[in-house]
Image (tube, rainbow, N blue to C red; front, top):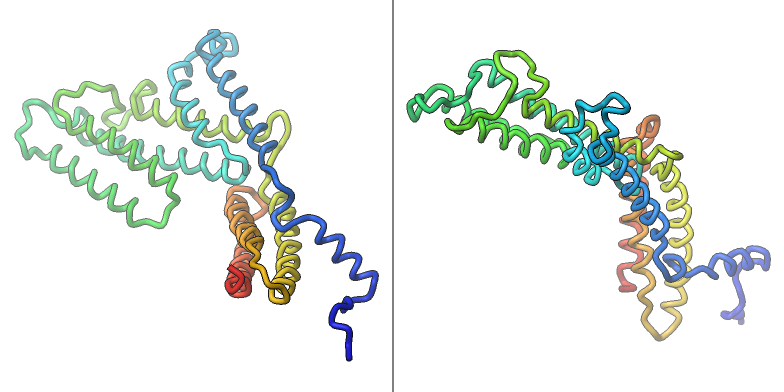
Length: 300
């Protein structure tokens, strides 16, 4: 009768498996992202101080960008919204902010080209400017709610457009805007676009200076290896689970690993030269997640 307790693999391969099992599923206890978030906090703080110095220390005039001081407060807010531990996600956030704000600015630019002062105090309740303004607000929001665009683009476009349209429809509003198809550099819409653009670009530079950091492609490779190792560990532990008499909840750590890997694959969308094989990688991770869900579901 065969020895059921004897290893099934030769000694060399068995040693490799024993070495693999020394590290628990999910890694050793502790926050593995502490160093990443600590460096992100340091970079974000330093870049926020540098942006603030343009106003506080009047550094803007010294380096020839004094005319941008009025946009720095908005730029810092957008910068803090843009930064993320994954470089590709930062690029995606920056693009969403810039394109969403641009579309809202373009919309109000065209609208005030035909109605320079918006709704006037002397206009009747259902004036042409009011009807066009309300119709524009509804159609603009409907388009972005129906389109399959990113949530960031939708938020920036609808938020900026709502503010612009409320001022357009307010008969007592005297906010400065570009009119008659002529761009006013100090207009509200132009100021919003410049502030958002500055904050978005600063977010990208924050991830590149003093050295490029946290590319999703590199993190994805490390996490893919770790996810594969943890999958093997879970299969080994599943065999031991059914041979034993006690429950084991370590399987849940492995299932969470695929979710982390998928987030980093999404972040790769913003990184150039990484998009070509992105669809294949996502299909692989989806299949891996389905397989592990079905394989480890009885162990929960």
